[in-house]
Image 1 (spheres, rainbow, N blue to C red):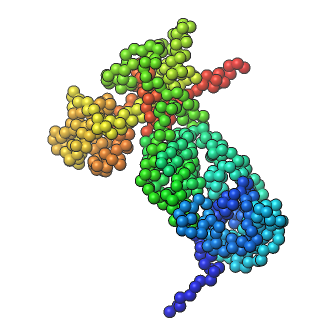
Image 2: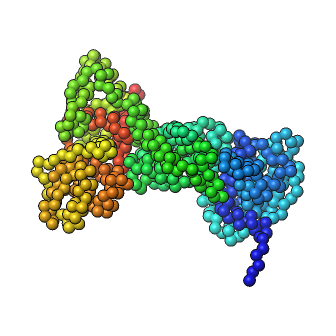
Image 3: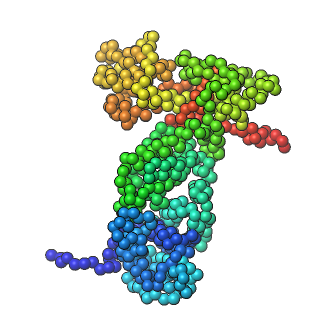
Length: 596
């Protein structure tokens, strides 16, 4: 039987390298973290063959003393912590003291450093397990770490590395993460002798725009929320910028990039109402939290963390993102992809400030369904587009146009779009998508208040039903009533819908009932009223929203525009598509070459 014996130091380091140095990008991450912890203000990365042939990182940090060069390449040697209390309140990016030793064990490494105040630099070389003695070297300041021939002494591991293009892409991603979290540092990235990225010191918004591009910058909402000992700030893309992959998702905890299931779930929940299921949001977010409230010593890669109060953090992130995406009282944004979002003052909620008002039904619902009246400005509502106003009317209209971001309706286009005029130019609204969002938000609020109003049908809608549908109806009367439905069985094969939510009375009642029963049968009534409730309400809103080719009066169109201005997330439908966009007069003039 084999005897128990200690492993050689080199083998220990090579085993550790399997976790710490998975690929060139992993080594680059560890080296960059050390440069940042050393106080560097300028970092240059030079790669050859995707980092497999060479990773060279130069910085202008504080440097390493001659007597500590060998220690820097020894496992479990670090300047970051010395006690358990230090570990529990860690603020540096590195702290485990094993990364450089692991890298040195699987490469040919040269470490050159000049500590601040020293007369010259010192250099040490490592070839597998062969360490040289420190020798004088020429370096103006800081540290240069040169890693060559990664995994040269473990050929089997080297075979698992991908192509040069793929390995460089991973290195580039690591570089972007570091640059996003340290916007005050100048970063340069070279590959095979060519400069790929040059990032000057900037503020956070400028650095985000430089890395993710102007389109993200123009299609994003700002997040800045604080609660107790937590602060979340950064930028989240509006749903119209949604992507098919997760390649633009960056979350940092105390400036450390992390990948955490709790955080991912909170973000998915925040976007659930506005994003199609097969799309992914883009974001760059920074969480500042008491170091004692987060454990970063979970995995050697340090990208996994644990939180002391996960539930409170989940709710904080969810509400912060939800608020940024909604922002109904601050701005109404154009989310057309590729165009800069425009911010306008929200619709004024106090009718006393409006110059003249007439009684109108309660928004789009009032116009269509005859609910209680509220007041809207009389100017422009129902005014034919061709009418030429007097000078006094022009001034009044201009003032009211300034008050209403979406302006006033001019007419319909192909029964699908509403054309409106606002203070800046032309607004085009997808009436079904906009109405769907409004109905969805109203249904959510009514269900939260347990106030979904039932609309009894003068003539019940009957339809042929399967035995399963009849059984589902009889077993779930309470849940159906909570959702605003009164459905009864007339026979083993017939169901009658006697009442529906008031906002859905003009929908296809039979199809709506069938879809709802199918969802209850598949997920259960309790799930429908909790986890799946928003999906069900979204489907109900889609059924009830005004359809294409529905002719609307100018009063109905204007009522829809007013409701959009007062509805959260009204600039996206339930699937994340934009509901409206604006073309300015300047853009129209350019199309018609006016002034040329």
